[in-house]
Image (cartoon, rainbow, N blue to C red; front, side):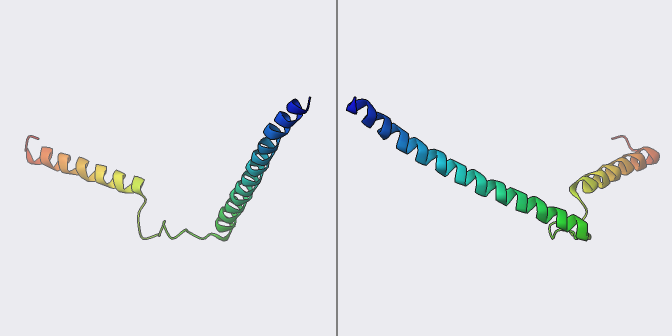
Length: 85
């Protein structure tokens, strides 16, 4: 009987410690996530633009669209000039 109790205690203690550590890490990560979301909400409410998205620098999508329009314009000019692409 004592052997079963010692085996149970040997297995239960590390499991409880691991579960407690996992709970602590999860709670810290959740708190960080909530704080980050709140920061983003505050930035949106204040109307601030993050430094990575400067107003002078166009977004990647708009740069792709501009490049596509330039390519189409080049092709149309070539067609108008009679050059075969």
